[in-house]
Length: 288
Length: 239
Ligand SMILES: Nc1ncnc2c1ncn2[C@@H]1O[C@H](COP(=O)(O)OP(=O)(O)OP(=O)(O)O)[C@@H](O)[C@H]1O
Ligand SMILES: [Mg+2]
Image 1 (spheres, rainbow over the protein chains, first blue to last red):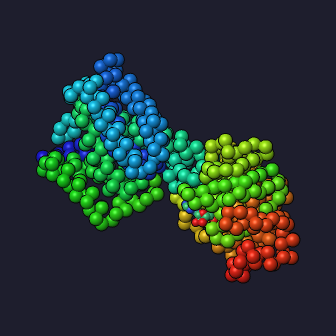
Image 2 (cartoon, each protein chain N blue to C red):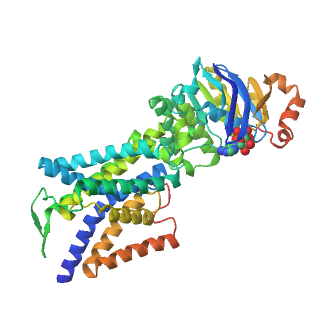
Image 3 (cartoon, rainbow over the protein chains, first blue to last red):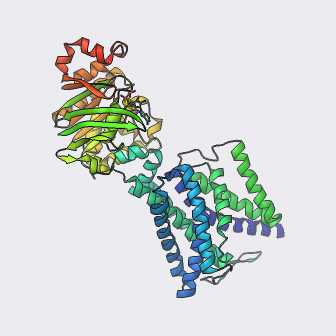
């Protein structure tokens, strides 16, 4: 009875963190897939989402508004970064890695200067506990899981059903031919970069009531989403989603029954396995 | 009228087009022939704005295309069948055709006309374009360009790898387009087939147009073909 309670808790924790990771990793995967660039500053968009959410909830007293404002503000920052940094270097793969490392430090240090080295919490917007047979569970975490799932679904619809989504996929597969069919590919790149940043910013904002906001919190987000993207198969959104959930669940189970450190080791081992063995990841390229 | 005047293009330092001039009228089929590496594909890419010319002008009905962004050119009614088909392999056939429709916001009724030209595509709509046979992919590439409702159509080796029956079908489609007033710039390796479809022919050699004349004229001068296209005519008899 105790063991099954623990297992249930572990799976639940894993599902919640897996869904939040899926949002972040989906953003990274989208940017990599469509633009063929590795955004090393991706985790900083997560951190900015959290810090801006803290800022707006402190200033406006409404976490709901903060949840809207954070991705919008981060989206605007991403658009500026695309226009001022990535487009001038023409999205050249090596150059963007160096440039986004620079962006990482700029954003991190700016937040350190303005926000300081503190870890600050926000009160959860909803307070209730869901009673399971073995224990009560934070209602807010379940709300996070549901919101994350809805956003993932919405992103999926955007990519598979809308004109912008079609243009993103076409640009990913052949930018020249896309241009020859009237696609303004530079705008598609800007939109993909902003969308990727907004997805991770929402994830960052959602976890502030659980984890607090801190200027270094982007590093973990970056590492875990890299793992998800690699395990899932570079360029495959479906694979990234599956891998993020897998990482979340493995992390939950191993953390509860063994230790959080072992959980990270297991996840890294999975990455190594994919890199050594099936270099295509769970899903091959192009499966979207 | 689509005119190319003194076009020069380079990849890095290598000058590939050395002053290409062409005129394509509505309802005209202009064959552009030349050996491998002559610069045919480069010419088409430059017209589509995918390559910035070093010199020269490309003018569409009095409008200089050089000032436009690449994605604006197809919206003016210039459609492209890339060499090697250039399909979006992971998009379905339907999505590939939709890419054509969206260029000028055509509605789905246009697809019905296209299915009359390429009936085999109707059953393939939900399939990923990359999984089709070579011949079917070639059909999709042409159908996608037609979905964009072009006034001028640039085709880069659309007959490549087609079996004779499909070659005839595609030549028939080109004939219909011509009758409807579409100007077709046809790059081909299958010289016999190109000569049958074309009104005029331009022969290209290392980045220059070396000969331009009517297809009938050229048919009577095999020596000209021999000179500019060399042995290839004998090896690759098409149609
Ligand atoms: N991306 C590129 N970078 C550098 N050189 C190129 C590039 N594309 C083509 N070239 C060179 O430019 C020249 C013209 O190439 P192009 O593709 O236009 O010829 P083509 O007439 O279409 O030949 P083919 O009949 O083989 O298709 C060739 O010498 C080719 O090697
Ligand atoms: Mg060519």
